[in-house]
Image 1 (cartoon, one colour):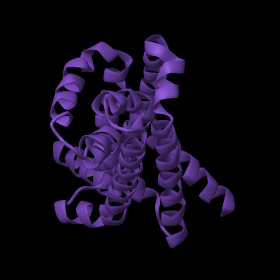
Image 2 (cartoon, helix red, strand yellow):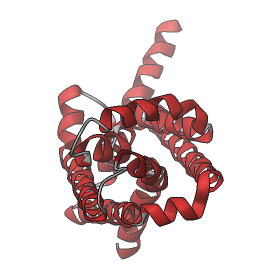
Image 3 (cartoon, helix red, strand yellow):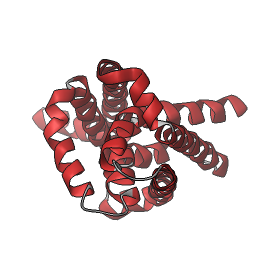
Length: 224
């Protein structure tokens, strides 16, 4: 049981951290808070991470309700979530393709005094990809402790994001443009792997579903 909970927490971290991508977010954060005092930057970083935590936990708790309301199967959610995550991973493998979107986010953020909710928390750290993965994680929960383990994973990811944003000046200065791009590609590759695994699990679940097998049997019988 303990091993299962540890694996669930680690799995949550591995799935969410590359999507949150705090290192790329640190570069964006520095750009949109240019001219702000150190204290204001720290407040914005803290608030953004708090928003991120509550957004993801809210979707975790409401995940099953959302699936039941829209009639989404576990396999369908895994395949759809996997496609979305894999696409994000592919974009991250080619950072230049996302530059136009980043410029739009920056220009919009410069007009705001408080950027902690948008664009920092959403969509930078807890966007559609992170939300899809979080809802997908509800399929791993059977007991209350499973939820606790996933929430712990979300909390650890949030703390990592906060620490990186808090030290964003040093992080970006240390890594430089080349280092940031390399790190972005590594996280993109991890995301691509996670997304493909989601798709494989979804297809496997759909193919081995008793209803799907019954449907195939009926089709074969009708052909005969």
